[in-house]
Length: 502
Ligand code: DUC
Ligand code: ZN
Ligand code: ZN
Image (cartoon, rainbow, N blue to C red; front, side, top):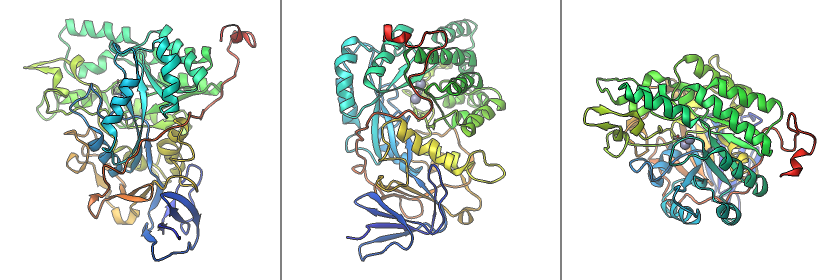
């Protein structure tokens, strides 16, 4: 049998190369089986003309929230994954979230499987949110989950219903050391936020804008330094999610310079949006609720600039969307923070949608134009290949290379789309009723998306042409360390001192 699909006449971008335009992709059984020139066609080969556009790997969005209990008006797997493929993302890693009252995680993971199975347009995996990491769970249930392909956890240092204290964080890190799962951390100091919030509330400062005032950069800074210290103490790799401030990012940079395996993630909202977006607009005093996310949007364009520097200089390993959707117009969504005329930012569900806009926003700044901020290869690293490595999908996802799943995005030839695309809620495919990026212009958009060799998105001919039965659960292996290494000595400790207690 020949190739079932050949993609021709495009420029393939990988994490390390921009290949010559003549190179074609040959696909067999849903996998990339050949990269070469003048690949042989058979009668059964579908030849897709990339029309001189760039070809990148399907996006791997390693941080999305679909079908979570705490955002009942947001996206389920069907709407969230539909939005994913329309924006070129073919793999998402969502969350199965343990409640603090639960003394098992098996039930919760099973429940999230039922929320996704046969309801996803793209491939998916789960991270486990651990809010009650009992010794029993860590000793007996985590090994089972790892066998089942759930090889990462998210820990919170803030939010009463989710947060772990330092002793609990250390216990989980010690388990990660033994079991090898990847640990993601939401780093903000809970007590700082709580004290400021109580005082803001007492003085009547409760409109959405005060969300940003209640979570200053110092809260992110302190928690970031603390979790890096705990990770260094236990010699365990971590990834700090959704970073937004330069002062916190500098701790990561410094740790990486010391070769510690500290990874970091940022998101488009921290590259493009400022806290002014939390203020009243369009005559709607509450509209800022649409941009309530945590950490909050920061105040100064220099804050955005700093995140772009982290993108370019390698501090960030991944750019995820942190798609955390809550409908604005629904009383169970963002409007939970509005009781009659009274606005209360503490009751507004946190998060912004963005799974569909992540790739187009970042791709607009990738390349060699005057206004480019990252190379095309770095775009691929941040959005596909490095999240795949970090979360145990290496060899399967995130790369246009032989043996990988044929997850492929074909962008427009720039001449075809001279004016770019203006982001409009009316054109997006998620289940929420707004986008924080409304009206922003991007230079390009995925014209075609393929999932394991099947066309699932064709912007000019039918839009979403995939099916909810296309997406499959990804049994992930253990993640790789992308930055730094374990096994280093700790400042002020004797060589091998850890062996006394580790
Ligand atoms: N953390 C997330 O990861 N997403 C949304 C809100 C939050 O606090
Ligand atoms: Zn978080
Ligand atoms: Zn999140």
